[in-house]
Image (cartoon, rainbow, N blue to C red; front, side):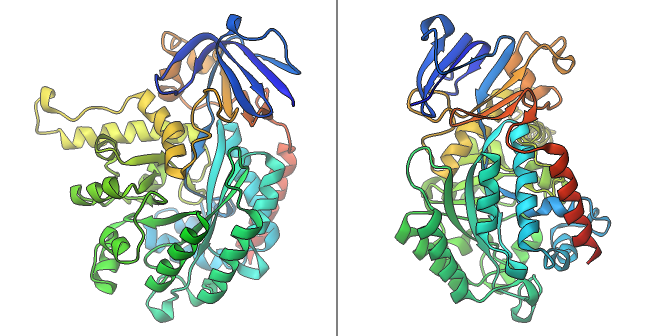
Length: 461
């Protein structure tokens, strides 16, 4: 069994139950799991591999709870740059319909590489259209070469324009085929054990792209196999109006009607939810993937995240699609979450005295959402903090850098308040994925070239 000794960290941010921040900290790791955490002089002196992280801050690996890897291929498409969600989708659906299996593979590696370089160690992706023979298998196989943990969501769209849905009929699937493939993927790839590198999620895309029957049958299938459920919800006011007109319910009420509330469910966005709906999330145990950059980029609004957290709702972070964020930097997303929560507090407290104004999100709260929060949303108790028995998933940033000059009186806060930087090391299950700020398993320049060629083909038809 391989061992790894991490020592001499300037600060080791554990995110454990006591939220310990250990100066001169370290970890002893065996076979990908943490055996000891503490001050470096309390740990063994040797291991198969020793990683000296003097002058580095070390944090639990960030957890991305919502993404669309394939959208790296359609960043800043001119016709979609200044559109809200529905128009943005209608612009991009025909382009995405040209995707091939190889496009899925290269975009998966691009997105995961960006995530790894931002300190992410686990990523949930939502792939919901499968043109030209594409399969979720393409994503799973490509991800294995990068080295991050993958929550692979078998998304789907079945409600085309001819049946009152938003997507064109050319990108929707037959519901029986969706369910058959969902079952196949669970049986072939899902690993429920601690330390799993791949888990399958069932994820019909949204209320405006699938039928209620598919929602119900997907929920039943997921619960039969013990896998989790994910979908977009309450992202925009357009969606709210769609649900009221087509189903007679607001989005959260509609989820109640199709058996989509519970500890095994999490929703992307939840921007337009009221106090009663937040309470439904809390009592049902449903989680939320907060995607602040995407919500700002598409002018969708500001999700009431602090209110959710204060009421005990599970909240994680997501970078969302790289065509509605145009990046896959999860550390940047933590910063955005903190800043936009502060903006919302300012807007809500504009007419109040300073004493009565809403609280401001702190840097440590933002990091907690990105780590422990994400693990809770994904239903994983083996990741999200650095403590005995958990996966050795972490990232390290060298503190002696221009970006942090003058900020080292609180290096933990600096990671969020200061401009996001590349991780110097990212480790998944005790294995290096990023070393000295460079990818270990892929050649970055080659990946960029392959990705740009794919994007050109896609956009040029």
